[in-house]
View 1 (cartoon, rainbow, N blue to C red):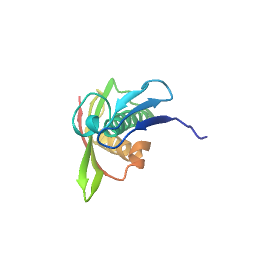
View 2 (view 1 turned 90 degrees about the vertical axis):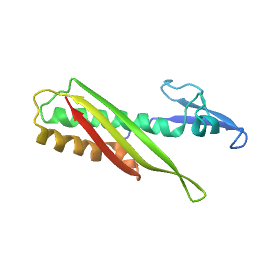
View 3 (view 1 turned 45 degrees about the horizontal axis):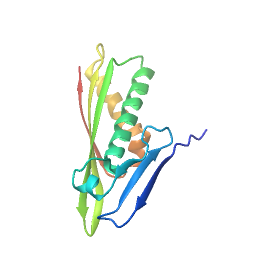
Length: 142
């Protein structure tokens, strides 16, 4: 079974003064503005790195929920932030690291079992598998 999901981007102009919009198939994002100023200067709008961060944190949280469920645990909550690092490398830029930070509320699980499962989720999440940059994980079990 293959699942297809689509995102699209429209761009006009040069890199510094140009601008674009990002739209998702679901409509969650519809013509959301992006450009050099939203990516590098902190102006309102989105950018590829925060979209990757949102996708990675969502995928990781779902993978963790699945893997916990497979072991008979149901988390009360999973809150994950993905901090995506975009660094100047040579003449261009590269995503060099994604730092996942997750807070999980799950009474009744021992820390050794939880450590094993959460690290499997980090490796097993489909978005993690796509990313070649370093991925770190810091977490807190409540």
